[in-house]
Length: 486
Ligand code: AMP
Ligand code: MG
Image (cartoon, rainbow, N blue to C red):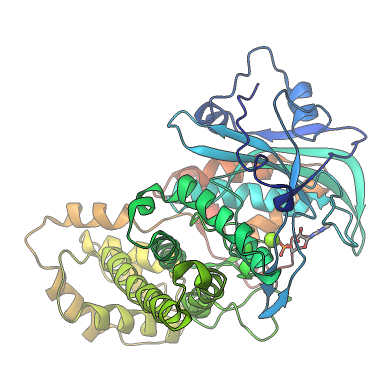
């Protein structure tokens, strides 16, 4: 089925532990992703749903798989934990996809591993479906993220606050190497393992830095660049990761481990949904600063590799942290220029964007629909479609006059709107719809889950049959708190 080539399993023993998927009572396929399977070059000839359920719940280990749990550490809400690791996940192996990219195939929720500590290694249906929906929404939105290949119900209950149905998610990632993977070895003072891991990461994700004068510094810069651009993308679609611990930050630059994540309804930079984020550490607007903080933790691990002279190593690492901020700012401005339909660059653009966001904040405007409505104005529709998005009274007239003079660049209105519609999604995974899909699935009704996954695959068009999915929540539908994926 898979053509495995397991480079991580070939790394020294300290990097991983053998893992064995647990038995599941009645595995049943919930959803499979044939488009992704094709991209991965999977050979599915003669494989029926029952067989898929066996494989993607870990009951049948495909030929060539070498199931392992990866070791990692991490800063959780700012506090270092030297022993985390895959407690609820195991990697089956790696494949080279049709484009020659190496991808990890991981089962999430397939039972305990050497790193499970007191956990059961299982996943409840809700978090599995949430990750499935979000992963595939990200793919369609064009934001780097891990992918979902399959969701299988185990037929067994897992004990959380109540008994819940259990499930296994098959996740596909460029790799599962985290900032926390480096921290695991650095904390042990195992410089050799840090170097081995860095060489692996360079070969796998950033081969162009191998020939740099200082390859490890160049790797740090490349990771910082990927992360800063990723976070700018998150902000551009109103995404709040929710648990930006260093163990939930992939060095590949893909969004990973989005547990209690959420999307903004109305714009508020201080918005937090996660029930465990009591101080708002991972609020929407804090994400760039936290990303930079996480990269600083990565830099600390790499100092001995960057320069023998500690002072010089620190100075070089500080240069990367400064670059993180600059790259983020430039990327953010470029994305928000496009969201506003601004062609080229003008000196006041950053101010124009910030002023609009400030008006949205005051006016409690829905983040997604407001940008979409602005696109309609650029296409020649009357101001009312935009004004209707503002719940609290704000005066937009002077801002609109500035914006109109800025976008008056000779393009025809339809072209301008088309460019804006291509970057401002009409449909996002609205928190209340995600919860609704999960709530029905827990009672064995997967129809809304399937409908939502299908709709989310086409987020930039206003399709008539997805109109209800685009609407913000009514007061009764509103989700105020999201919960961790464990
Ligand atoms: P998270 O922040 O949810 O990605 O998980 C943090 C740590 O807790 C990781 O080391 C996970 O492997 C571990 N963990 C989470 N849920 C479980 C579980 N049900 N059983 C064992 N370990 C878990
Ligand atoms: Mg995690």
